[in-house]
Structures are given as C-alpha cells and as structure tokens.
Image 1 (cartoon, rainbow, N blue to C red):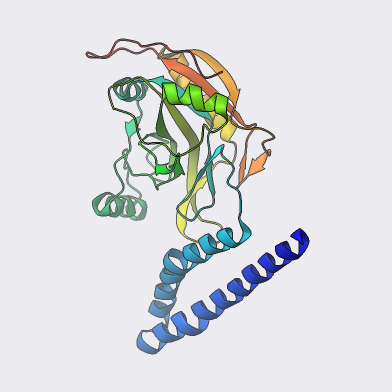
Image 2 (cartoon, rainbow, N blue to C red):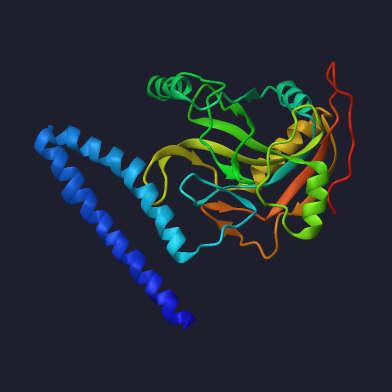
Length: 286
C-alpha cells in the first residue's frame, strides 16, 4: 500500500511538471509573444515562470510528496533546503552587533524596495554595497532576525555572510532535551542574553537557483570552512570564548542542497561588553 501511495505521489508530481511546462510555454509565453516584441516576451515569461509559477509549483509538489525538512538547514521561501546551520553564539543583541562590528563586518540592510534597487545597481555597475540585504531564509518558523557580512574586495558579488535567529536560552535547553529544538518560536526580547543560531556561507558570484532558476548569489559549497573562518575571526580578537562543537541533528547527510558539511555547529559565548551590557555567561544546551 505504501509503495502504491508513493507511486501515485510521483505520478501526480510528474503530471504537475508537465502541466507547468505547458502553462509557461503555451500560455504565458504565447500570450506575451502576441503582445510584445519577442525578446521582451522571453524576459517577461522568464520573470513570471521563475518568480511566480515555479515557486508555487514546487511548494505544491513538496506537499504532495510530504517531504521532510532537514532541521539542521534553513528553508527557502519555496520550501527547499537553504544554507546549513553551522554556528551559534550566546549573548545579547547589542553584544552580537558589537562583536561583528569589531571585526569589520557590516549589518545587512533589511530587504525592501529601496535596498533591492540599490543592490541591483551595485551588481550592474560593479560597485561596493557593504550592507547589501540578504534574501530571506527561514528557521524556527520565521525569517532571519539579523545578518552580517564582510565584502571580499570591492565586488558586490563576493562576500562572507551569516544570518542569525534568536532563541530564548531557557527554551533552548528545555526543547533540546525534549527533541523539539527546531520548533516554531517567537523572537526573544532584544535586551536578553539568548542563543543566536547562525548559518554562515561565502558568496562567490552569481548563479541561478535550482528548480526555480531565480537569479541569486553563487556560494562556496564548503560550509565547514566558512564556519571555521567566522569563529576564527571572533576568537582571534578575543570576542568569544569556549568554542565547542555540537551536532545539529542525528544521522546528517554529508551533502544537502549543494553544500558539503560535517553537520557540526560551532557554539561559543560572546564576551565583548558594551556600555549597557555586561557579559552574561550561560552553559550551552546539553
């Protein structure tokens, strides 16, 4: 029965794929081609397919397949595996901001019409944009709470960057033991010491996303090296202490999405003090 259900799911997904191709080619493109010059019709069809049709089809396909999400990875808006979770810091929001500012990283602008346009201009004109916005990835049922980046040279296409999601320390310790650490949570208060769960990767250029073919940053597949680089930068300047490695989940694959990772999360406490923050230590979840 299970085999028959799986076969039926695959047939439905295959049929959905055939319908999608027909919709894009014979409805979207043909309609645009009758009203617009050919080259413009191609551009319009691509935009509709990549940013409207395909993301919705993929989400529907995942529901049909009942695909499980790997909790050690962030999720894209289309429901696909995103960047791997590979580091975590304990501290307040002020301490987190101060620590990355101290090593020369910029806080990413919030994604919006103005910042998106500024990013497009930076890409086209090849000019620096040190605080360029990030696309939204999801963890704990919400998009990232904050992100930091460090440009590589003057290119807007190359950068070290990390996204963070805040988790209340009491909830983290309790839910870790209960096995539901990755469940949906709200963002804690900005002035309390929390666990900042991070996903750090290195952008190396431009590429197209899998399946939806949206324009995005190309990334270095070695997520372990980027994790070690970020933690080394913070350790070198004595901004963190007690770096330890923890497993994000059990029986993790060595490759998910296009990243290669050992599944370890580097965890440390932030020790930098600000005018209003003293260091608040806490033991990591066991």
